Length: 146
Image (cartoon, rainbow, N blue to C red):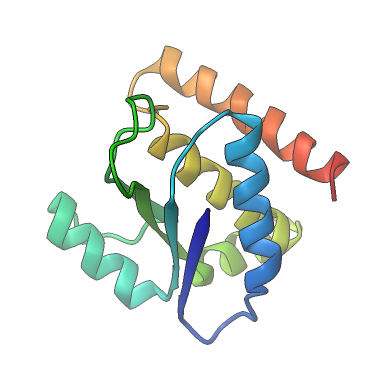
């Protein structure tokens, strides 16, 4: 499985091998088969641009996920699960305001994005509760398996 990591920001050092290993662990834990996942780390201006272009919303956000190939159908040929965009500036700002680790906040965004790629949603209250529960489960799993 190929994890493509694109770093388009300069606010935070990105440890590509660590991120790649975590994505692989998440997908293995959830029994997701795919050939590739693309992870982008971007700054505030880029996340605002993407949010405006794709969601007609000019505000900033923490992360955006774009599923590409279905994760639950039989694989035919090369399959890309999806592409995600994570705003490091937002993670830094939130972590500082809430006295938490920037790395923990980034991991939450990463897990959140991967969950969107594999079918989780956070629009309705019931779906939000399921997603939060799964986020906690996976974050605990990653901590236990470092």
